[in-house]
Image 1 (cartoon, rainbow, N blue to C red):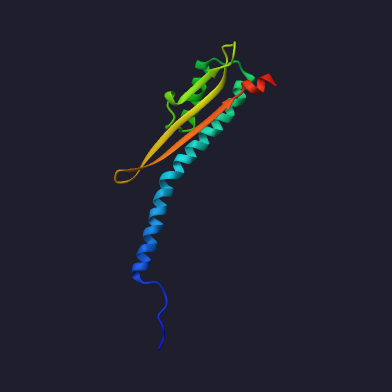
Image 2 (cartoon, rainbow, N blue to C red):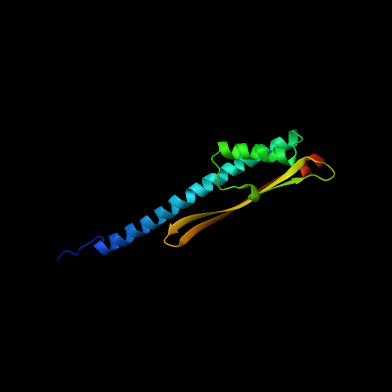
Length: 127
Protein backbone atom coordinates (compact mmCIF):
# COMPACT_ATOMS: atom_id res chain seq x y z
CA UNK A 1 0.00 0.00 0.00
CA UNK A 2 1.31 3.41 -1.03
CA UNK A 3 1.26 6.26 1.48
CA UNK A 4 -0.01 9.60 0.16
CA UNK A 5 2.28 12.60 0.31
CA UNK A 6 1.71 16.29 -0.15
CA UNK A 7 -0.39 19.07 1.22
CA UNK A 8 -4.10 18.87 1.80
CA UNK A 9 -6.51 21.51 0.52
CA UNK A 10 -6.77 23.04 4.00
CA UNK A 11 -2.96 23.32 4.20
CA UNK A 12 -2.91 25.13 0.85
CA UNK A 13 -5.60 27.56 2.00
CA UNK A 14 -3.63 28.33 5.19
CA UNK A 15 -0.39 28.88 3.22
CA UNK A 16 -2.12 31.11 0.66
CA UNK A 17 -3.81 33.05 3.47
CA UNK A 18 -0.45 33.73 5.15
CA UNK A 19 1.13 34.76 1.85
CA UNK A 20 -1.80 37.11 1.20
CA UNK A 21 -1.56 38.62 4.69
CA UNK A 22 2.16 39.36 4.42
CA UNK A 23 1.79 40.66 0.86
CA UNK A 24 -0.90 43.09 2.06
CA UNK A 25 1.34 44.28 4.91
CA UNK A 26 4.24 44.84 2.50
CA UNK A 27 2.05 46.72 0.01
CA UNK A 28 1.05 49.13 2.78
CA UNK A 29 4.44 49.56 4.49
CA UNK A 30 6.80 49.87 1.50
CA UNK A 31 5.39 53.23 0.26
CA UNK A 32 5.74 54.71 3.77
CA UNK A 33 9.43 53.80 3.86
CA UNK A 34 10.03 54.96 0.30
CA UNK A 35 8.66 58.35 1.26
CA UNK A 36 10.83 58.39 4.40
CA UNK A 37 13.97 57.66 2.37
CA UNK A 38 12.98 60.57 0.13
CA UNK A 39 12.81 62.78 3.23
CA UNK A 40 16.25 61.53 4.31
CA UNK A 41 17.72 62.41 0.90
CA UNK A 42 16.15 65.88 1.05
CA UNK A 43 17.61 66.38 4.53
CA UNK A 44 21.07 65.39 3.30
CA UNK A 45 20.77 68.00 0.54
CA UNK A 46 19.56 70.60 3.02
CA UNK A 47 22.57 69.92 5.23
CA UNK A 48 24.92 71.18 2.52
CA UNK A 49 22.58 74.14 1.86
CA UNK A 50 22.74 75.15 5.53
CA UNK A 51 26.52 74.75 5.66
CA UNK A 52 27.26 76.87 2.59
CA UNK A 53 24.50 79.49 2.69
CA UNK A 54 23.20 81.81 5.35
CA UNK A 55 19.49 81.06 5.20
CA UNK A 56 16.70 82.36 7.39
CA UNK A 57 13.98 80.08 8.74
CA UNK A 58 11.56 81.25 6.03
CA UNK A 59 14.09 80.58 3.25
CA UNK A 60 14.75 77.09 4.64
CA UNK A 61 11.02 76.32 4.75
CA UNK A 62 10.57 77.50 1.13
CA UNK A 63 13.44 75.26 0.00
CA UNK A 64 12.04 72.30 1.93
CA UNK A 65 8.53 72.82 0.54
CA UNK A 66 9.85 72.92 -3.02
CA UNK A 67 11.87 69.76 -2.50
CA UNK A 68 8.94 67.98 -0.85
CA UNK A 69 6.77 68.96 -3.82
CA UNK A 70 9.22 67.67 -6.43
CA UNK A 71 9.94 64.53 -4.37
CA UNK A 72 6.22 63.69 -3.96
CA UNK A 73 6.48 63.91 -0.17
CA UNK A 74 2.91 64.42 1.04
CA UNK A 75 3.02 63.17 4.64
CA UNK A 76 5.28 65.92 6.01
CA UNK A 77 3.35 69.08 6.87
CA UNK A 78 4.64 72.44 8.09
CA UNK A 79 3.72 71.59 11.69
CA UNK A 80 5.99 68.51 11.49
CA UNK A 81 9.08 70.61 10.72
CA UNK A 82 11.10 72.54 13.31
CA UNK A 83 13.74 74.95 12.08
CA UNK A 84 16.15 76.30 14.69
CA UNK A 85 18.54 79.23 14.50
CA UNK A 86 22.08 79.17 15.74
CA UNK A 87 23.14 80.98 18.85
CA UNK A 88 23.53 84.74 18.41
CA UNK A 89 22.64 84.74 14.71
CA UNK A 90 19.61 84.71 12.44
CA UNK A 91 20.62 81.91 10.13
CA UNK A 92 19.06 78.48 10.43
CA UNK A 93 21.42 75.74 11.61
CA UNK A 94 19.16 72.85 12.59
CA UNK A 95 16.15 71.13 11.02
CA UNK A 96 14.07 68.49 12.78
CA UNK A 97 11.35 66.57 10.97
CA UNK A 98 9.13 64.36 13.12
CA UNK A 99 5.98 62.92 11.58
CA UNK A 100 3.60 59.99 11.66
CA UNK A 101 1.96 58.11 8.80
CA UNK A 102 -1.23 56.08 9.24
CA UNK A 103 -2.28 53.67 6.51
CA UNK A 104 -5.55 51.71 6.60
CA UNK A 105 -4.89 47.98 6.85
CA UNK A 106 -7.93 45.83 7.55
CA UNK A 107 -11.32 47.06 8.79
CA UNK A 108 -10.60 49.54 11.64
CA UNK A 109 -6.95 48.55 11.97
CA UNK A 110 -4.27 50.99 10.78
CA UNK A 111 -0.57 50.52 10.26
CA UNK A 112 1.35 53.39 11.87
CA UNK A 113 4.85 54.55 11.01
CA UNK A 114 6.63 57.18 13.11
CA UNK A 115 9.61 58.83 11.43
CA UNK A 116 12.22 61.23 12.77
CA UNK A 117 15.08 62.90 10.92
CA UNK A 118 17.27 65.81 11.91
CA UNK A 119 20.36 67.69 10.83
CA UNK A 120 22.44 70.08 12.89
CA UNK A 121 25.19 72.02 11.14
CA UNK A 122 26.01 74.32 14.06
CA UNK A 123 28.30 71.72 15.60
CA UNK A 124 30.13 71.34 12.26
CA UNK A 125 30.50 75.10 11.84
CA UNK A 126 32.18 75.45 15.26
CA UNK A 127 34.87 72.88 14.47
